[in-house]
Length: 173
Image (cartoon, rainbow, N blue to C red; front, side):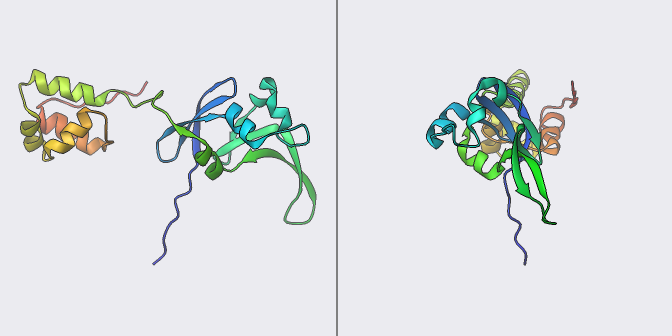
């Protein structure tokens, strides 16, 4: 049996402010990369390839390439598989970036749990009653209402339509 290895990848840059970058990883987490702290811990000096990135204007020329952070303005001289010299942008591996990042709730999920709780209370239902009607458990309803778990759209539909007797409407803006 072949095991798949889950490697963290960056799928979106949420925000860049100064030397801080908020990114979304392929596991859905929004994580903060504080490069002021990172470069300080790396003790970057003018001899290091990262040195130009200590200037905010150069640092902010980042791009998302190959599901990782890339700085095309910092060329790396290398040799390709055919033995030819080439220039590649400076990149930091996404696994390294994941380890250097911190979880953040700054870009937390929308308050779906609050919406469900409000609708449940307006319907005069307890968590137990909503759970029975929607085929889940009170513990699961509690975790959803408190924003402690993710859920699939099919589960949300069961809770809203079977449990609350409402119609689920999804809007993408």
